[in-house]
Image (cartoon, rainbow, N blue to C red; front, side, top):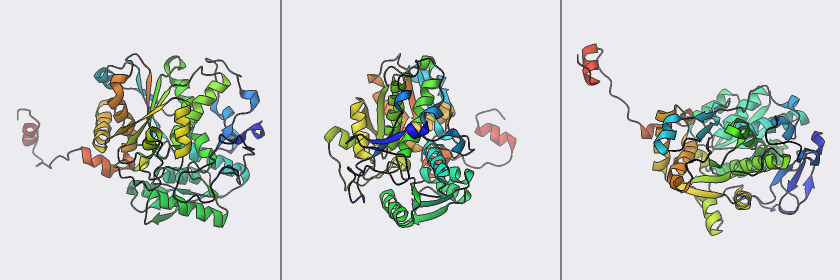
Length: 408
């Protein structure tokens, strides 16, 4: 059955077996990949027998719609993250059906576990021991943790400026870490050169088709968890655009198998200082010299590697993308924490900042899901910018009571 799954290129229609040698379409890829979005990105095509095989309220198992058998997945429990109702936020904004999908509860604290989980399973199926990845931190720590569970060797190319919490995770999981004096884009290109020279499997986002496929699982979960299996809007953070394409792919697959009649309105959110996809979407300008700078490191990307595909995907489903400032992001992070108990990292909080910016354009009765992709402990330095640390006090109860406004 799983052999019926194929890779396909949306640009030219070519199909390929799901094998390690196929990463990009051999007809559409560029000869030089360095420093620019990838062409010829492949996606997984569902077998014909799965199409229209379900009805909207039928039970389903997401593993049936993935190209690797369940037996090869590592024992780490990835996915099944909560869809959270936050009553105070719902009251504050007047949206009774606003929901938070918090992927910070994944084993390594981020959404990236979904892609790493599938890449690891593929490697186990094919007897591949070594996997390399470039990352600002989340994909790296994710692949390191999942790889540790699967007893695989993980090599990480990471900007030296990545948050230390993510670096510590990678080292704790036993990965080989190569800190690069440069940006994520530099690390990405070096990682590809490394895999080409060594034959190591690349987990690089967008380049490996299974990264998009693994991320589609969140769409399946959202529909399974949502009231009446219905969502009107899905709002998510966007950096290189792979999460965006993965979410869209998931909803499109749900429509193909008959579990969904139409996909939700997809709205991506970018930081003002990392707006490559926004500019391409609205102005058809793919600026290959763009330099990103934002507090939200997980969505800080120069030339988005999935840029061409993400823009095409977003246009095809009539989605949208909005920009928010770093101040908006940090304010959203603190607000989410104190009103819902969900402490997410800045890139995740971009989803809420985007919602807050466009709320007046959304029907109040809509079911809206905000995708929060990573835990706040991933980047404490950024979180510290929006809180004030209390002064130490003498260990005298009367003075403590007075300082808190109580009578001594």
